[in-house]
Image (cartoon, rainbow, N blue to C red; front, side, top):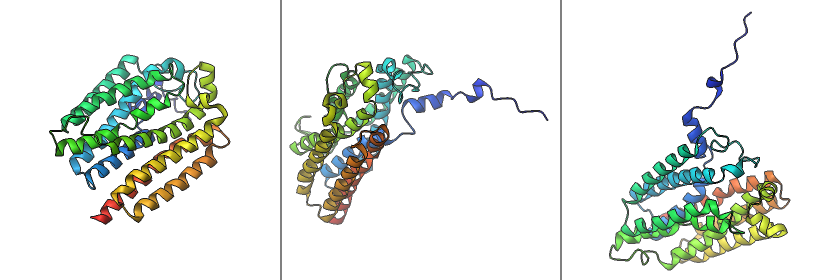
Length: 308
């Protein structure tokens, strides 16, 4: 009986589309969900309820597009380091399956589409989008310069909050300057959200700690040493406490406090996962973080819904 011939390299190698989807982490939505939940929460809070389909679609699509563009830039910036890290060695740009030009062109196209969406919003939102883009561009290089680059990521991953407020207030009061369109509450939420980003990205950094030490990279997990777990838990506490204080002023009732309680339970689960600092436990804790953001967002949505 004739044996079937083995598949050729062309048949087994990924298509160009598959490589681009891998580049933007299409099959790993946790990254853009971590960006999305704070932004949508800010939309509901600034609008005091349902923000409308236009704002919702722009922020959902814009979040996915900008996170994907960020992956393109990050993989180009880190390509020489990623090949020495177990978790990232097989990324398309790192292994040479896609060129630097391919990745940068895709990232530019995605960012331009996202900017086109932003241009349908208020002038204040457009202005703040340039600040957000600047921070996003700086982050991939921060780990070479600062001891806790997670703080830079915290700003980048929280900037959907002031942009959401600028979108709502800028459309309602177009006479406001782009800075005045973002109230104090938005900045308070941003700072609290930064603490959450520091928590989950330190968990992420704990996964690669050994590789990063060998490469001479700077991360919060390395800088903090044995204080890493304590730092993560303190950051979670700051996040929950600050958002609790700010959101409770909207009088969302029992649904918000139930969301906070469920969030606290999740945080305790994270402590169990990371306390022994295993790669598997820390990576799972990072991947589960979007459920924490989703829980608080659900409490806000239900609270406004019951109040209507």
